[in-house]
Image 1 (cartoon, helix red, strand yellow):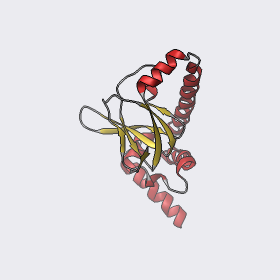
Image 2 (cartoon, rainbow, N blue to C red):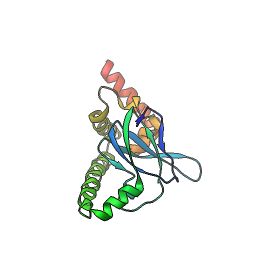
Image 3 (cartoon, one colour):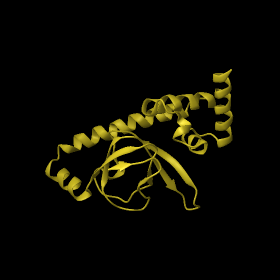
Image 4 (tube, rainbow, N blue to C red):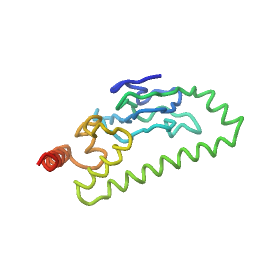
Length: 170
C-alpha cells in the first residue's frame, strides 16, 4: 500500500494488523487527554510496527502518519501471531528488530543529551538527512515537532533555523 505525505496509517486506540515499512518515513503522534498531540517516534524503512505488538496484540499506542510518500505492507495480526507460534525461532528475528530500534533510540538520546540547543538541532538534521536528503528537516516536520523531538521550545527552534539560514546565506 502506498501512503502519501500526511495520510494516516492507523489511529491511536484502534486495533489491527502490523505493518512493515518498505520505504518512506512515518511519525507516531500520541494525543494526550487534554487534546495536545506529541510527536514521540519516527519510523524508518525496515521497521515492523507497532513495536509493542510484535509478540502479543495490543491497541495502537499512537497515530501513524506518513511524513513522505511511503510504501507499507500490511501484516495481518492473526497470521503474524500464528506464524510465531508455529516457528518459535522467529523470536530471534523479532529480537533483532527490537535491538535495531533500541540502537536508533540510543542515537536519539545522544541527540537529546547534546548540551547546546544548536548541537541538538544539527544532530537531528544529520540523522534525518540519512532518510530524506535532499529534502530538509523542515520539509517533513513542523518547528513544533522538531522541538518535541529534541526537547526545545518551538521559538528556540525557529531562532536556531533562522541563524542557520543566515550563516548559510551570509
